[in-house]
Image 1 (cartoon, rainbow, N blue to C red):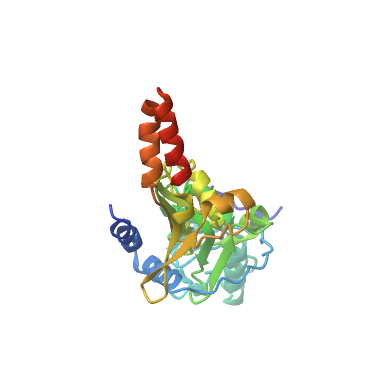
Image 2 (cartoon, rainbow, N blue to C red):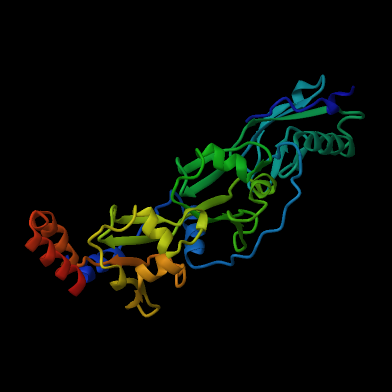
Length: 337
C-alpha cells in the first residue's frame, strides 16, 4: 500500500378578562450567542417556508478540510518540504518552496494527492508521496437552539445527521413543537424544515445532513389554557405540534368540578388585529353527543365558569336532608334552578 492511500487516522466523534389578558400578552424571548445564530433565528421568526423536506441521501465521505483548520503536510522522506500549515481565508496553504495550493473542501487524502501533483508539476520532486492530516479543527461547530435540553454550540466532526446534533444537545424537551428548522451555512437564505409529525420522521432525522456552521432551531409547541372551575387549571402544550380539541384540553385539566356551569363555557381566541373574540361552548351537550368538539388554536383559552346556583345546592343539601321538610326544600331547589 502506498503512503498516499493510508487511511486518515483521525475520526472523532379574578376576572376572566384580566387573567386572559395576562396570558395573551405573555411571550418568550430567545437569545443567541452570535451574529450568525441571531440571523438564523430572526429568519425563523419572520416565517420562512414550511415545505415538506425531501429525503437526502447521506454521503459517507471523510472529514473535510475547512478554512482556518491546521493541517500537517508530510512529504515522505523529505522533512524540508513537510510542515504544519494553517488554511488561509481563500482555502489555500502555503507550502515550503512549492508555494500556494488550494485544499479547502477536500478530504485529507484528496489534499495529499493534490499537493503531490503540485510538487511533481513544479518539478520539485519526481514521485512525491504526501500524506495530510487535520491537526486542529476551526470550523466544525453546529448550533442547536430552541426546545432542546442543553442548547448551545456542539463540535460535530465529519458528516453528521440531524439525529446526531439533537442527541448532542440532550434531545428535545417536552415543550418541543412540530417543526425543526435548519439554516445551512452554505445557503443561509434557504431554510430547511423538518416536520415532527411526518410519518417517516425517524428516517428524516437520520437522513438529513448537518454540517459545520449550521443552525438548528427546535420550535416551541403552541399552548392552550384551561381556566375556571376545573380540577387543574393551567397551560397545556400541543406536543409535537398535535392540536387539541376542547374535550381533550378539559381532560388534561383533569375534568370539570361539580360546581361548573357546563353550558356557559367559552373559548377566548385572539384575532389577527390583536383583539379577542368569545366562542360559546356547551360542554354538557358536547360531552353527551360528541358533537361540536372544536379544534383549538395555539393560545386559545378555554373558560369554564362556576355555577352559583349549583354551588349553593352543594353547600346546603347535606344539612337539609336530615328532615323531610329539608328534603322537600332541596328537591324544590333542584327542580327550579
